[in-house]
Length: 254
Image (cartoon, rainbow, N blue to C red):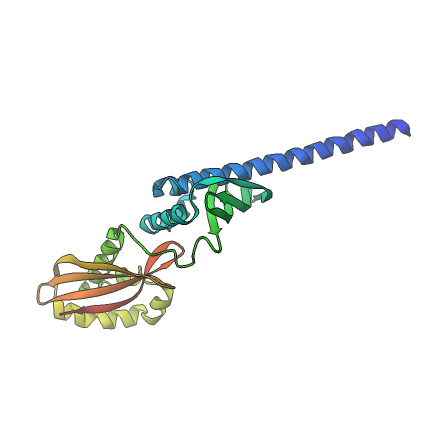
């Protein structure tokens, strides 16, 4: 009986040590991914951040908007100092053979603390959320240094409108806006434009202006030179999950 108890005790001790080892490994894993993430965020280079993402997630994120968020983190939080030793949790699991890591807790910065949540699948970030109430304001988006991506999208969108390309016109719209313009409705809307302006012979950017507030919008004005008539198209972009989408527009007009 004594020998059996000793064996059971040894097995129990091994189990405890294994469990502690797993906890230590999980914590180190979570610490590593958070450190890598914030090193990339504070580098000022959006490509270093998107390189950590799952490729499909990276394709859904606009680099100019991501850069604006990175600059806001630098401005409001300052340098990364480390993770809270007591307020951090990391879990590691398997889902259909893929490793899923969820890491969340308090991150310490030069100007105060923030809460960070990261989710990775097979070592690639698929979701992140960083909040710092009282330090990182909700209306942090006050500047967009590079508007060229949205000017390109606005130009392609207006060209599609004038030339009657329904699919190309619908694609960059916010889903709620697309609900108002199904293919049939959009086709009927575009037909008069095509007849009025004719083929697009050229375009140029007239202006791009970020309207800040609780729901920031980027307003892009594009001059459209048509074979029959010229006009100015106005495209409004809203920002949803780090991507700019068309939320409303005005048909080209003189």
